[in-house]
Image (cartoon, rainbow, N blue to C red; front, top):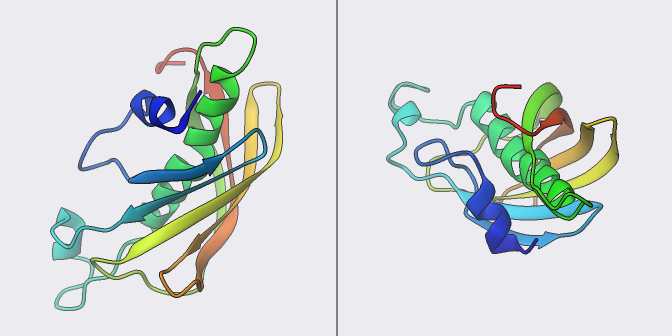
Length: 148
């Protein structure tokens, strides 16, 4: 599968799509970008008069690029050729710096393992200055259907 096909397989749409571009992808790693639009609704209340991107949204962005896109790539290039869906099962993320409205981030992920339908990845998010914003591990299960 190529990058454009992977993006078409993502099970998200705006305002919950946090992938703008896939930069590179292969059987062991993926990188991509996302720019946090200043008009996203969660900025209105997190925090009043000083908006910051919630950690759960940063985690979701890393999961969409670093886990789901890689899972689609791996299953779409398997013998069946049918891309699977990846359901998030666990995260362990450390947050180091805030991400503000309008910032563009880059997500880098490396596969730790993919076996028995479980994908585990090491992920990190960088800001435009190349500083690590957050990093950790994310895991998910690959399914053939969205309901299990």
